[in-house]
Length: 263
Image (cartoon, rainbow, N blue to C red; front, side, top):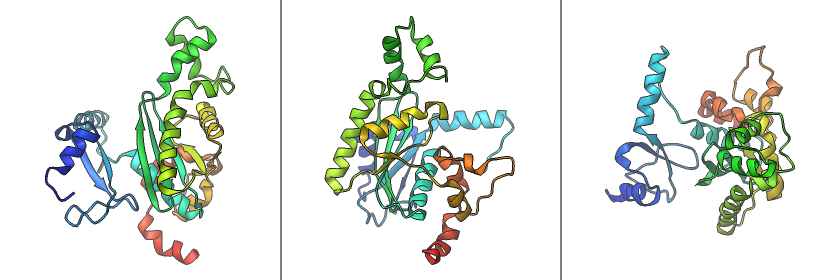
């Protein structure tokens, strides 16, 4: 880490990105604080970032809408931080597999109450399931398959294992490597960005991995972090898909001492 060219080498050779085109930051996996490049005493670091072009595009959209934010944060980082805090609050000791399944890719993380243990991007997302839906149901084109897949008009639960087969293979490889390295087994899985109508994907992945779905007690956790919802929002209707949003609101440092006293 102390070598001046090391970070650029990691970005180009391992992350396969041009560091000049990205806004990057290094964080400590235990608590999300900025990695100390001078001391470089930690053997692990979390690379966070996004293309500079995406930042400019986002800023232009916000300005066009008349919005002037004080800062921009990465929702994934907030979700991981919120989950780490929730696991510590709930005294859940087993590692949890957190998934962000997007259209073209899946971000996979193994999280514990001690921090972020491992992460891996997987080039398998929802779009990879569309051709399988088209083939299995005999639909005429991909667009028809996509519309049906993203609607609530058909129950894909029975077809689930077939649809996630390639993604599951990658997840099993990721989990297997982690379990061999640490001796710990994954206990639960949680998908943080899937819409409710695609909740069967989360259930199918959990069933195929032989683990349970994390059912977060959001009311208790929100209260511990002094987050109060409007009366028009059902507090019992909030679930793990809101970790990213609530993670941006939570004041972890201010509650550290009170949490320790409670425990």
